Length: 387
Image (cartoon, rainbow, N blue to C red):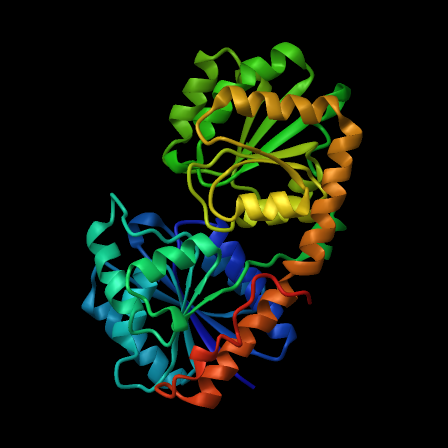
């Protein structure tokens, strides 16, 4: 049995966290043992990812971290790895990459990273980004969630032979079979349009709010549900009030019933300015919800090939409003898109499909050795293989 130790810094249950939980479930079904090391910043409170992992009986170790670099945290991670001796260390995100690289030096444990939405620059974490580029060049393998992320990694100097595109996966049937949980909001014939994500500037929720007056002027029975939390929440709620649409918008905060949320929606909207391969879109497709999304990241390939929705220009609230209205006014077309999306995700982006590809990657590393160049063959590259 292969044991994979995952390392992640988490600020809540968002896309990368849901990807890990989905991957962990898939790997365990394939007889791969999964452990999780999660950074714990005392100022941020108890990490929700750790709680969610423990609820799923995933062995979890919290690592208390003071500031951006904490030598005692590094030593704790290194001790954890020495004691538990995993076959592979799998890192997710800047902080995990840096600490994982430093902690495994001399231990002979292969390093894998998943880059969820990686760019060559990060205004808030420039030093982290520069250091991350340097250490990722030394990882045995780096999985990119989309072709765009793959290009960014190659441009940053990560050897192409060490990069694979491995699409995210979701627990399709668990989502598809869930009962809707927003029935009270849909009372009186209201049609629910939903958006899910961390409330940060890059997600474009302000663009969605600016689109809402045009939508409700034409379809007054429409209600919008924004699920998630983050630093932009107060500003967005104030903005909704200022636009005169507050009674048409529900900010739910973080919810624990996401399958039921997706199953409640007439359509799903993602107005982001940049993305890799967003879990929220895959989850919405698994729930048979048609998608309106921006032309960023893997979304043109995903939505376009699946014929699962409509693509719009990022930042264009009028374009967004018109796309939402077209699907509200053409329910048969919207239903067909929803069915297309479900079939596409079921066949290509299930948790099991993702887990099978990562397990092949782990096996390749272990069978061929750290320095053998075995990954240069590209045999583990996968763009969404069927389960």
